[in-house]
Amino acid sequence: MKIKDLEYYQHLVKRQNFSAVASDFHVSQPTITMAIQRLERDFDTTFFIRDHVHKQLHITPTGKQFASHINIILNELAVARKEIARANSTKIRFGLPPIIGNYYFPPLTPLLMRHHLMEKLETYEHGSRELLQLLTHGELDVALLGSLTPLQYSNLKAHELVHYPFQIIVGPQHSLANKQKINFASLKGQSFIIPDTEFFHEQAFKQMCQAAHFRPHIIYRTNDIHIIKAMVAEGLGISFLTSLAITPADQVVSLALTNRVQPIFHLSIATRKTTILTPTKQELWNLLAK
Image (tube, rainbow, N blue to C red; front, side):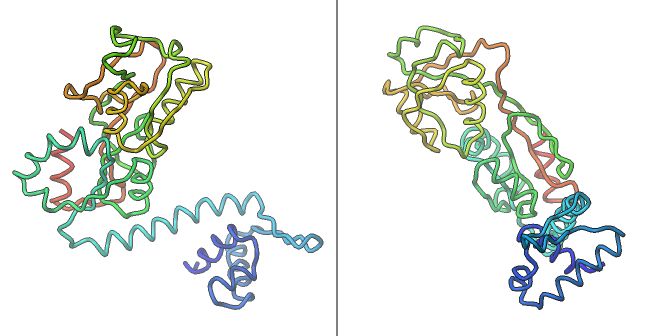
């Protein structure tokens, strides 16, 4: 079985056109046809059916099943190339989401500096969703990730470090500022200032709104948590944040949610299961996983 045949197959599933795939790879159409025929002979099945009347290409159920395996195989090969190319590197490609980077990671930096690890970090700052993809595709070695459920992926080794509740924050002069707890449903009609779609906050916020059966009045979105808290402090609206991002120095009042069912912000350290951690990367993992 040739790797190139698998690449042709994967591309054919996406393009659903032999000529288009041949053009994309700068080969003849018979080259693509013969590659697919080889695979079909190897597996004794038919992966594609040509509809000559409507000039369409249909993938069979076994073809769809094979495609899911090919995606995993080709991704693992690509990851292997990246890992091997970086095997002797002393640098650690480290994923760090904004909220975790601003509020959880700073107290850990003195420890990492004492172990001479800070200077070895190549830090990539993106939302947890994007970092998860980068980690899966071999672009990162280790990442701290936020999620609404414990990280359970077949290709990842993950260890949960801590978890935080979500809370409502209001300005000190807001009518709710004298409360300590609140039910989310009672916030109907309030003006919300919330994190942008890059954060898991939006998904958690949607869950709470759906459970409370109301459509929120959102007046502003931003990926800058400091701006959100500053606007809330000025009484321009209220927000919904993980308690990790709320500090005693903020000029806001935080209210715990009384809802029986509510989302939780999970913070984990993760790497790929196939990654053989170098002593330096293993030391980083051990220190962060304590």
